[in-house]
Length: 183
Image 1 (cartoon, rainbow, N blue to C red):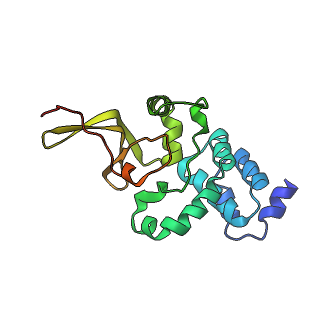
Image 2 (tube, rainbow, N blue to C red):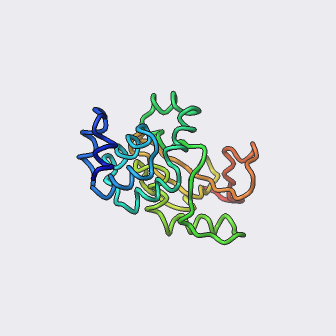
Image 3 (cartoon, helix red, strand yellow):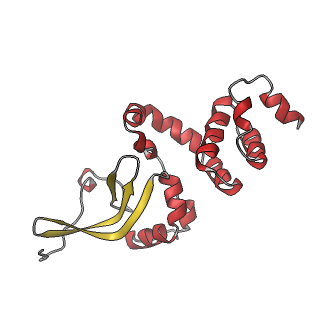
């Protein structure tokens, strides 16, 4: 209690905020965060998303504040103009997938689908899952997208094409057509 008092007593910005989240989350934030900016980030995150202790602990352990700060430098202006783009980050932590050292794209997709709640928490709560290996028809050609989501804030579809090897420019927009497929 003394540490809690000492941490927030003179902070006019954070003092009212700490009352809005669970005591357990307050203790976790107070002990894990070294700066007022990080504390504010996680307190507001808890307020907006109603995080349980476990969800908050995962976000802190995966260094969400630091990853967001790095991404903010790159994508900040874009995200400010488009509220739903808050999921843009340079790195995503998907440790909950528990994949072996060697795996295929199909294994990655199946693990994401089986851990959908954690995946959406990592990418942002504005996503709604539509389907896996989702068929899209363009003209007379069928394409399959690994994962398809709907972003409620942006009111648009988000197609995720999974690749397990190093990024290559040709991967950008590289959804493969199904041969001989017609409408």
